[in-house]
Amino acid sequence: MKDEKTSQFNGITEQRIELTRRTFLSHPAIYRAQKVHFYLMDILPLVLTLISIPILVHLGIGWLDLGVFAFMWFLTAVGVELGFHRLFSHKAFTATPSVKFVLAFLTHIAGQGTITSWAATHRHHHAYSDSKADTHSPYDSNGKVTFKTFIRSHILWKLRYPYPNPNLYLKDLLTDKTLRKFDRFYFVNVLLGILLPGVIAYFISGQNPTFLAKGILLGGIVRLTLTQHFTWMINSVCHIWGATDFSTDDNSKNNLLLFIPTLGGSWHNTHHAFPNSHRNDILKRHLDPSHWLLLVLSELKLVTLPKAPSKTLIDMKLRKH
Image 1 (cartoon, rainbow, N blue to C red):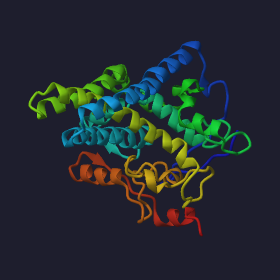
Image 2: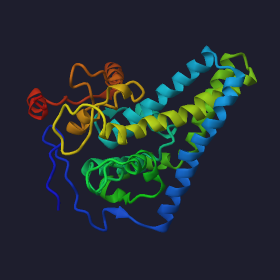
Image 3: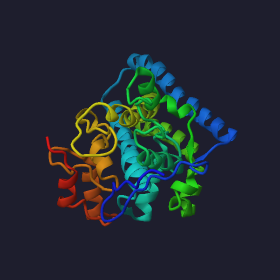
Image 4: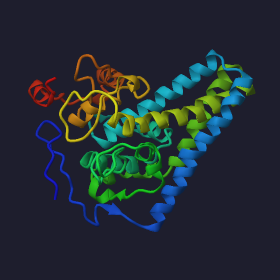
């Protein structure tokens, strides 16, 4: 069994679980579901985006279209970074039932899988980051990055991969019956996320059907595709290019270029050093919009934020350049 990895704070440790037949679930039905989701939710939106672009250029893109797109992008990014990532995968903060419900819905409109599936895969990634057992590392068995390993880490791994056993990784989430029932509406919520921007644009424009179509194409399909790839860049790009500010046992990087579209999620080396921290702006030069939003929600008594990592722990993990 691999050694225990102390990568959390406040006395909590993250343990590398021994790789056994219990670590993953292997069944033809699982692989069929992965294949269907890959083509339906990963490839189809990309194809539809390529089709949508010339249509949008022909129809014309105005400020209303861009505003609806930005609004939907923000909601989706919040769903990924605060919902999928910091709340459900890492329990970096606690939320009221209403906020938890909203974040659960926003995770679904990202089209990246159910909450339980996303969290199980992500927790496994942290336990084996950039090792042979990592589901989406851009490194090969020799520790090298090739075009093939990069593309696999970015998207192709989703076609078929060892599915982390929820009974092993998600004992906390599996007891949440409401969350499990909510995941059953995943595909419905993805569709609602595609239609919602069209409906918003339709009514703001005075019930103009052209804006309905543009809202669905730009705020729905194109937004879905772009936010997916920005998330996947954290798996691929942020394990290759960027700064290594903290000592970790993987190749995670802090990437400046991606912090806006990921709402602070690209400070990935910081996150791997302190995976259960609710904030990624531990270094003052890093801006973390997700943390800013959490501070607002905290002031409104909608979330509860634990103490951040201590200065002693930060200094201990900070690399001396």
